[in-house]
Image (cartoon, rainbow, N blue to C red; front, top):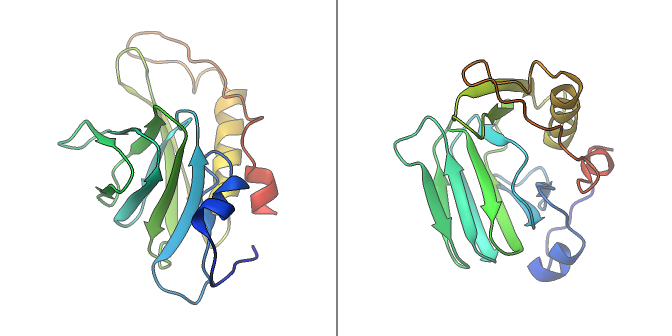
Length: 177
């Protein structure tokens, strides 16, 4: 994926889409930053191998956490939100938000997880190796598997069946290529 050394955040964000997680710096630079312009709830909970930090450049909303002592954290422009390693979290914007996510380039694994919207029980999780599959390719593949299998979308605790994810707004295939 082509990357620049210098860029204007808001100019770059004008071409960004929801949960693009587009790497912005050359691979050789430690502590990579990833840009997204989010206008809808993240369709899954992201799980990063190492600690990460979400930096809010514009917009308001909240980050939801699972399996953590904190259930959510609201955000406004200028906030830095720390996400501990292995903590499932999901961004839920109230207004369109431009965000950076700081990730360590040493990361080997990433995962997405789904939880029941009715009772909060875990539905399923998909993990991949970043050396074999980019984050965007992993998001797309995991969402397609989730969509294709009603059993993965069904809660074994309360019986709720969750709808398939509309993949049209996401540019993950384009970014992965």
